[in-house]
Amino acid sequence: MTIQTLPTKRRRHPVLESIRHSPIATVVSDPLQADNPLIAVNAAFCAMTGYTEEESIGRNCRFLRGPDTENSQTEKLRKSIHARRPALAELINYRKDGSPFRNAVMIAPLFNDHGDLELFVGSQIEVLPEEESIAVVRQQQAAEIVDRLSPRQREILQQMAQGFRTKQIAFRLSLSEKTVQMHRMLMFKKLSTSNAADAVRIAVEAGL
Image: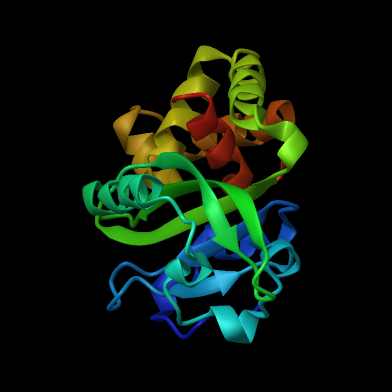
């Protein structure tokens, strides 16, 4: 996976590494650059859309839009980016070969240790014709999974979904960073994932 050139401190953001291991199509964009271009995409995204990393990086994710893409859903995502908050939307996107597919999109902001917006992470799941209710099903499944978490783990997951990193979460919850890391590890195990990007999607789907 290629990562577009970034200042050293920003290049270390853990999500840039974590999306490599996600089976879900995932991208990272840079809202501090003009037009919020993609700076990283994983193999699952390339397989789903037909676009290579080289064809995707440096472009705004709107290149997946087409004639039947719903304006109301793209506007929902645009407003969430502007407001720096997570969101879920379901819309028609297009593969490189021009074929349409229904895409369940999640976006979430990521902040640096000073609380400044740094990146956006986005993930996509194809909704097949026979799976029209996938959004409702996934939301129910996510809520059930989140219910397995302890109150502290749920708090930490909620903070992650809002874009905060370990150091910030520790400060906001009056915990040590070591304690936050311990809860994150246990939380990931309960969520059956090993990366932050997938955990954030579960949190957003569950409505945290």
